[in-house]
Length: 498
Ligand SMILES: Nc1ncnc2c1ncn2[C@@H]1O[C@H](COP(=O)(O)OP(=O)(O)OP(=O)(O)O)[C@@H](O)[C@H]1O
Ligand SMILES: [Mg+2]
Image 1: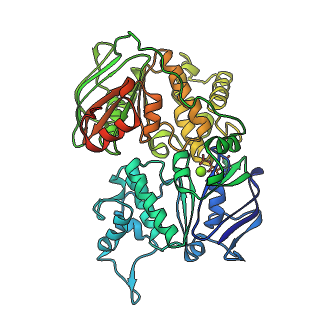
Image 2 (image 1 turned 90 degrees about the horizontal axis):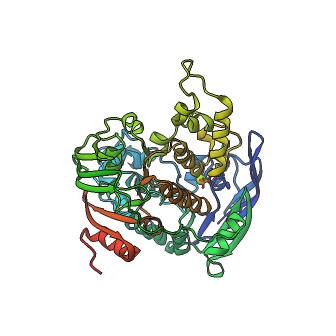
Image 3 (image 1 turned 45 degrees about the vertical axis):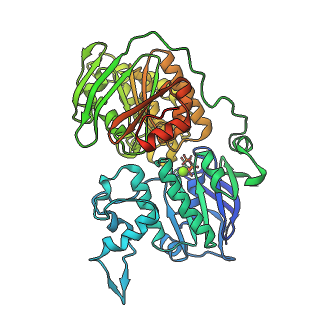
């Protein structure tokens, strides 16, 4: 139904897509895969009319599209969920869903019953929220599902999902899959981008692989496997996704939380974080994991006691926490994690100014030292940027996430708090991050990580505390730490007996 033919695209002389050709058939789910910065979102932006190709063409139902724009794409039946959330946080869920496409009857806008019109769409995406809630009050995953509901308003013949599941837990992903299956059964098409390989293999009929802006192959799902796709993506084999776990350490805890409570979010949470250990916070989305991290990171008022190295510690602000050696990498990178309007260099240097401008009254930064630090971080996390001077908003989504994480590493925090550290990150870099986190732990850091990806928690952590309705209901480690038990405890909220 749609083909992309020999498309090229550059930004400021920087070639991002080169002679890209692939097609999507009616009633097919096509996966578009590739490393961070490979050009996936850029191709999709050409299909949805947000950008124009420098050369090549987009052909819809056999006709090359002309004067293409987001409006035209929408009226031609192309719906999309973008990688970056675009809801207006101050408007209600229903208003967001119908923004630009208000339901009308006989030319009259049906504004009063907007909420009623929204309900069936919310139901379709498995979202049980009041359509009159302000969108900004919902957790990220629920916002992502609202975006999906919004894309369904115009009954798309082609639905584009650019990492539409990246902030979702297993249950929510199933809801998205249901929608995708319905569309496929109705002979509509779907293009999906995801860095979760299991999802790609579960859902897609064919996979097209992009590498450095070029298509390396298109494969029928039945004729390929995980390793083949990874090889096409990154040009090499990938072994040991997760690092080995060291033997249990004898070290006493560094940070101890007792009865940690954030009103309305979590209550009575006990945690012990020790040097050399990676502790996971699991559970379905929105069970209080985020607030535990925010409380420890000085971002949420809380009750209960927290001790750091045996002394009471109550961080009242991020600055307080940072001074104590507690670093927090937030989930919503665009709002809390990076300065999108600043350069990669400025973002990476910012938390490290104290070491870069040592005791200087003039507060001048040692330029050479800064460059060395920035270059090292860019290399270590393979941040794909045209130069350190590039604005962070021009980086691909996954590369922005890398900046949000990388900037903390040189501060050598004693406690590292990570919310969804690999959200939107490609499989090759995921491996780098897992190994890096283990290295940091081995070097004496205490790590606490939340993730909606059960495989990640099981593969990476020494112990996982499972949260349900705001409190820890189970702790899994050693042979008990399996995906099955983690999922069971997450869903039932009770201790998963073997
Ligand atoms: N407006 C822009 N100006 C300059 N460079 C851009 C712009 N948009 C994208 N790029 C560059 O194009 C390349 C491809 O970006 P794109 O967002 O398509 O990657 P992606 O495959 O979607 O990656 P990810 O998995 O991280 O989302 C990146 O190197 C990015 O920095
Ligand atoms: Mg992208």
